[in-house]
Length: 78
Image 1 (tube, one colour):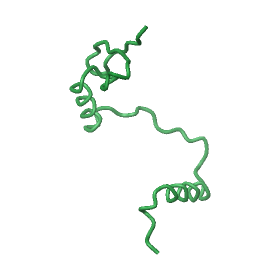
Image 2 (cartoon, one colour):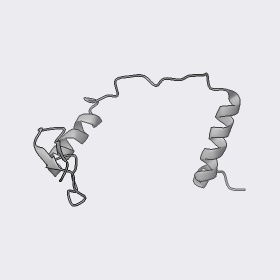
Image 3 (spheres, helix red, strand yellow):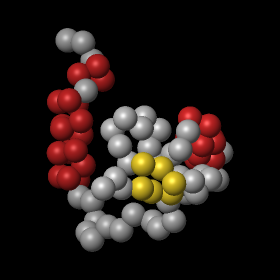
Image 4 (cartoon, helix red, strand yellow):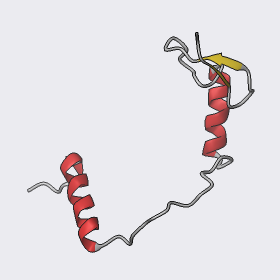
């Protein structure tokens, strides 16, 4: 049994298969229309990010160290 979903733009039924390169959209057209709506801020994530605790200096330092470790192009040459 093949899973079918509705296209987020036009609501047409779409088979959820690896061969469907535009899934969950039915076509490249619907995919590009949706992308354009995001680019024009027509779509937004409706809820703010929930933080259980405040970010400490230690947390920021650890995030920065991890980022620099994986993104060497930001490190100044020695």
